[in-house]
Length: 244
Image (cartoon, rainbow, N blue to C red; front, top):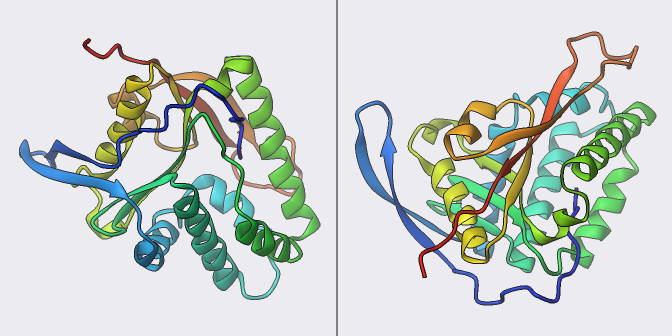
């Protein structure tokens, strides 16, 4: 979902990378983690990391449960590769270890998706069942209402964490924290707030300075969904003033 529109005040000299010291595990050990813009050659590995990282995500499960068209896994992998390709083209994705972890973000400025992404997206949409379209529409409508209630027109002036994922075998090493901190550092440098959507990572983001500002659920009124409603929330990190 893209909620951020063009802003003539965009700062064009955003940092291209950051190296951060993060604690790893319970030992308190610290290591240097390099966060850098993703390169084209990292896309396949990054897409695989994203695919496996989101395999148990509640929102993913809510949608995949009714995605009954053929070639489910292949279609989701194509979509993830195209999403990353689009983000690399637009300069809106960071990675650690050449794709072990990744973060796609939005920033004030041009966040329009590329033509190649739109082309593949339109093709993949044809495989959607009516129920899948209904669930995606439910998510989109609820998020739009929540964002409007929380931020109004201010959303277009904020940074937005769109997708954050780490390959399961390297989770717990501080990669996700380093990626989020790199984005919030850019936001702080421009005196901007940062927001995100999550269904299952509230404690993680709270440790990084985010607070819940809006909450809702998916599936609560859907007779085709027999499991518990899926919680969704919007979290906000208020800008921190940089030393002058």
